[in-house]
Image 1 (cartoon, rainbow, N blue to C red):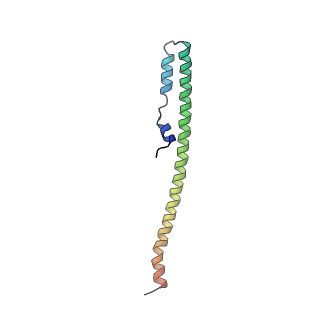
Image 2 (tube, one colour):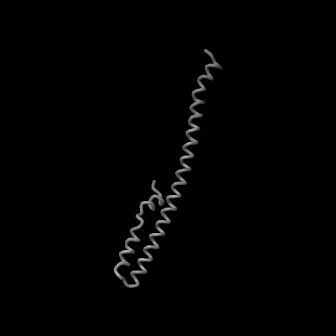
Image 3 (tube, rainbow, N blue to C red):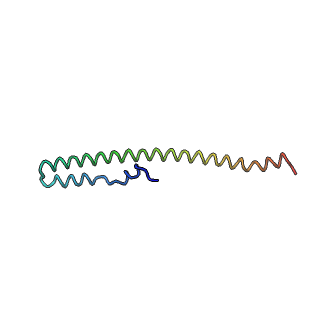
Length: 95
């Protein structure tokens, strides 16, 4: 299942700033300059949101990696215990 953070990371950044530069480069009227500034601000905001999403995903990854490590340790302990049960049975109940 893909969550919103993964969708945010796929959004392209820099395109809004490119459009803003193109709008401002042709000696535009004041309204186009205002639109260009808004596009740059939106691009910066999108970059910040993407960075926060990346940080959140990295934290989740670290937590999951730690859980996997703990489960591996528990698995090894359970395997040792499972191997020792037949040996214990042979010592306690010799046939």
